[in-house]
Length: 230
Image (cartoon, rainbow, N blue to C red; front, side):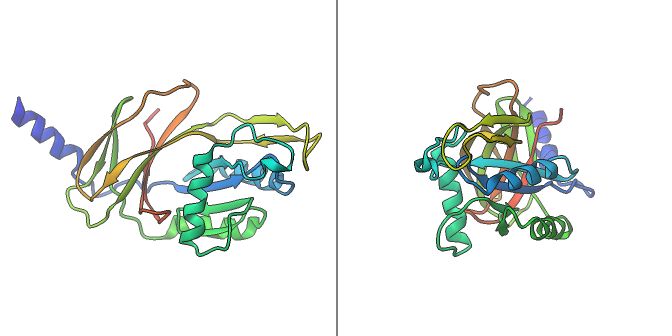
């Protein structure tokens, strides 16, 4: 029995000759109280429909003082953006901001620049670790040989379109449309290049989708990303 389990484990982490290229991860940092974010929300919503792209919307809370508390914002989303601020040597966080694969960033209203970043990321060399969902409670990350290391993050997001009527602040009277809003962000642990199993917390909403992102520490480049097969 132990021999069979060992062989299965080795098979799970043996790289294939034609491993699928992971999707390009596009992260939008936005806020319902941000007067210029509506255009970026709509643009990223269209990117979400493109094959080979995983678009994620992270609403932040630091514009709440303008008179409207963002209904989706969580402090951990702003913390994630702060890591990118340090990584890209920016003076301060801003919205709307788009980060592509953790490697490049641009203003969310600069749609041409964002599209160029997405195309470049799709063409860049990629050697991601294997990411395999064993069941709803476990994901295995790693390859037989890897010199990479980083952190493993779980993201749960809502693929459905969400509309919010803003009743105060700069966007008073407007309806803000969101797509792929992140509801849960959790660091599962460190990854040191070796095959490692991680426990997934139970889902709080059956309508949410799960993605696992392997990323260099402190807002570094995204090494790999996986989602359960539907």
